Image (cartoon, rainbow, N blue to C red; front, side):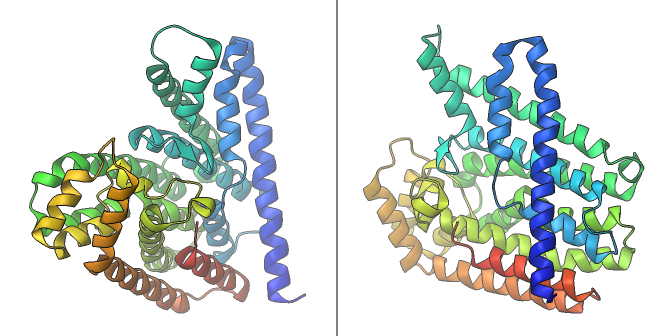
Length: 364
């Protein structure tokens, strides 16, 4: 069997195992929640829907971190770890969509929008949007609780004080801090020093996304398999710039992506008021008049197609888009260079290389 065939077989098997464990986990919790009240079903349905499908990037990074450190293929602990990461990702997405006022997720209504629609369909009293937000916050909280339950199910290797537990705890704390920095920049960015906007945006993507998308999952898998500190440092040197390239690509897609492939409306990040590295570079490099236009329009509830087209023009013509692509290339190159320095068997190294290639060049 070739390395490519073995990789495909092993990775497909792992993804299927994670999907199966998520189904089993949520089925057991469904019976508990239904015993409380059948009215809880829409919450459980929302979680199940969100953890079905997706790229499984975090779970796969965790798996190949495990395998690179000598972990057994398909072991139950790493399947459970992947399930915990997918549940954490789902919780983060639910809350992120509320914060960003995003009505869509993966081509369908976001969780808070689904609950608002349920309110309307049932003809319930009071405000449908307020109900949608409140129900989605609780759904995200429950999903976060489920993530902790799943991670604890790993057993001794995930116990208090273990390296894996410390990584898992740090990952969750950093995401919350990064989310706060993100919403703070949306409101404070227009009155802060413009010279620091790019640096602040880079810090946001590092802690809100990059670390928990790639660095921490890879290190988590390695720690569960007993990786040395040297290997974990090597993992970080590879995965952190990869995660930053991943998020920068996401920022580009949030402004210029095709809605058919991204599952989000065109220019959604601009309507949400995201002050990304892409936007920060545009504010820095555009004319004073153009920068003032972006500041006035970014996050406006009545932002129309013409305004989006104008902001896109400014981003392109100011050189901000090209500068972001250069950054993506630089981060990607740093990741691939670090990967080559890692002393790994051919299979996990090939798997990580392919994940990295797909992450940097993705279109959705």
